[in-house]
Image (cartoon, rainbow, N blue to C red; front, side, top):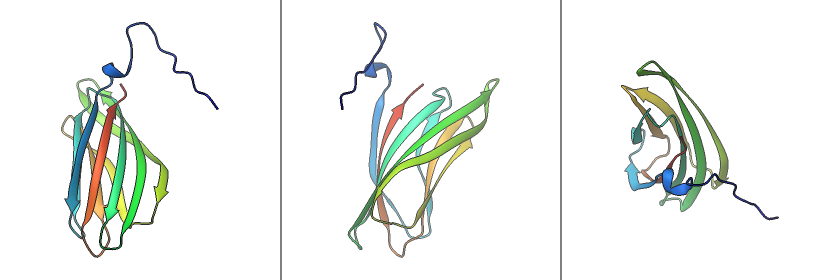
Length: 124
């Protein structure tokens, strides 16, 4: 199957910055903010890889989030997780509003620390 990327003149991936974060270590039972981005960028995609090196497990997932601004201050955020592949690792994800930023948070529910690597794509 072939895919064709359609774009308007002058547009392209260069206008959608990609940022790599990590790996970051999250201790047992901790909830850590692993990325924070201004709600000026209303739609963000995060690609995560979570590694439990003690159990030799690896899990990858995509998180797609949208900040819904009201006036100058953001009102709330919607997000979904999909494209979940790999070994089962017991962790939780959340996207919250803090001030005028969207924050991606992870909670480690396993008995040892986990490492998290993230790629952030600013969609709009």
